Length: 226
Image (cartoon, rainbow, N blue to C red; front, side):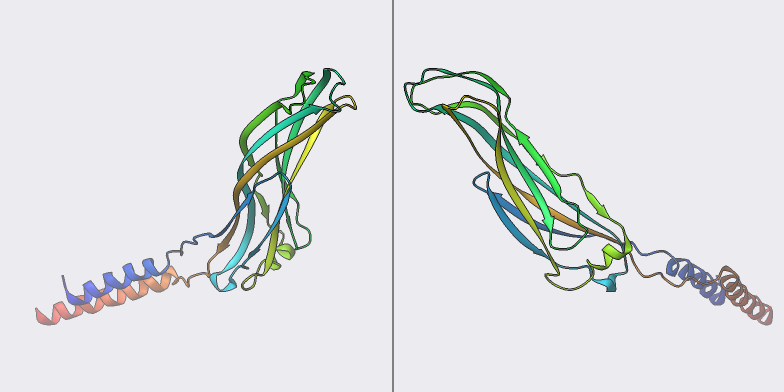
């Protein structure tokens, strides 16, 4: 193939390659949390989005964890006799909040099976129910342009706080004391989805003219050699 023809073909191929859009890889941050009881609070700092990467489209915040939970009861004072408990269950709840305004609190919870039955008057703490499972939030995408502007910036731009709370539900007589215990550990995830800066795309007509011009030069050179 004539040198000029090769050059023209290469120019056209190069033009098409240059016009291919860049792939945006989401930027994701993680922080792990752990609670040895059902009551606790932990705060974590997160970096803002680097606007040099492109235009921020949305921020997706979520958390996932594993939790263990027990529900207990004891008759007190001893000698009160066996007592009846109705629909007693322990509930463990995780809540994620932000120091930025207009943030919807993310929550997830786990409960033990409801217990209805007899709490024995034997001076022993009785386990009424137990549960182990996943406690997660649904992803919360932030797309409003005003809200997104709060997530653009440098290191430790904002903080997210995870809170663990335990509670008890059901009905027991005054001589029955209920309690709950448990633990949880998991991960908070923040993902920035963005569009990278646009790549300049040559106009199709210009590409055709360049290729045709180089092709014409190649044909002209071939005639002169003939």
